[in-house]
Image (cartoon, rainbow, N blue to C red; front, top):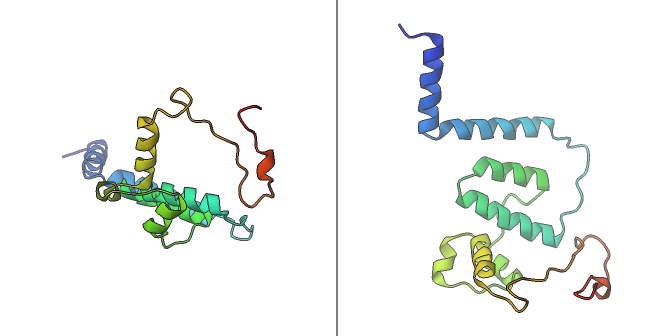
Length: 147
C-alpha cells in the first residue's frame, strides 16, 4: 500500500505533467489578491500611455497562456476587461503590420524591430524621459541628448 508521501508525490507529478499545478498556483494567487485588494482606495486614473503599455503586456501574457497573470494585471491596473482592438493599438503605436506579424503579439514585433535596427547612433536608441500623461508636462523641457 502506498504511503501518503508517495501519493502526494504522484499527485504532484501528475498535476505538473499536465500543466495544471502552475495554473492552480496562479489561480490561488489571483484569488488571494482579489480578497486582499482594497476596493475602498481609489486607483489613479489610467493614463493613455499606461493603457497602451498594459494592453501590450496583456496581449503578450494571453498569447503565452499566462491567463491568470493577465487577470491580475487587469484587476490591479484598472485596465478595461475587454481588450483594446489590435488595429487601434497598431495605429496608436504608428505600426504597420504585415500578415505574418498579426499572428504574434505587437510586443514581439516591436522587440524584433529594435533588435534588428542599427539606428543612427551606433546601434543605440536614445530614449527621452516621459512623464505619465496624467501629469502636466511641457514637451520643451524633456531631457535631450545635450543634457
